[in-house]
Image (cartoon, rainbow, N blue to C red; front, side, top):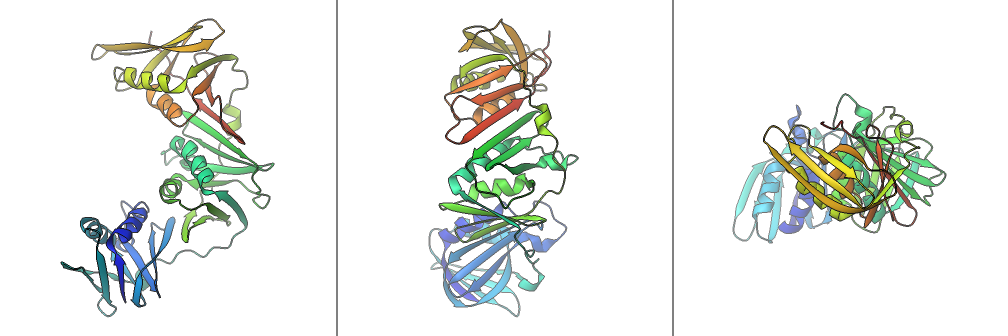
Length: 371
């Protein structure tokens, strides 16, 4: 197997694959990247068994072949090189890999391609087509609120469901909930809800490129295809919680506020919150909201005032500053609307302008205020 490639282009491709590599594995072969050369097309594959990513790139092929190369060493090598031409020569009998440039030579040992796990077979049962920027938007607005609790596996992914030509994406960790609706989607073939793992979506949003992307769904897997690249992930086969039951319908206290000033104020005041609870207090009046925090253990406190519009009676509510800041960060409207019911019930946050065909609702649970 022989080919020549730009070290910079190979580095960029390898960096995209690095997000798939398992951090811990009982199978050493998974610490490798599969190189598969056919003509002038080089396909590179990384997998952790649940998630597989295959990227293709053009090279100057000399002799076809396949080999698994240690990921960390080849990534570090390409990263340390200047932008130069790198020639790969692989001895299929010994799996020795020699990389030569104008100024040096690097030798390492790979593994036989037969030892590398095969990408699972895939039989599509439903297909969705997206504009890539819209798919990125869906992921960006939802994946941050996914749970990391392995005892609640269904909540470790984003729920995708189609209702009446509307794609609905939902995520929650029990403290926050996001419901993102994208209207005008032709997805009549998708007849079931699917839960896509957060790891797959975090990899996808980082590498997604081109004008369009396609999502194919089988009984057990989802496949995202774009620009000659394929990401295949096992679905989370669990029942998603009844999220609609926790979205309040009677939050009548409506507060409108400029998103960025509130977000920046929150970040500053949160520096003085308890390191354990991260609690901030919002004291909401007719024309302003006071953001305050107090750290009893270390004697720190801070408060700021942000203009708002509110027609009700003054009241106070507490939040975990991290969760509330995340909500505000993942909205991009100049103004946001908070809807409250009481200091002990969930607050609903929505952008004042969510975009054409888009409906965004975010929910954040309050915390009990210190007296």
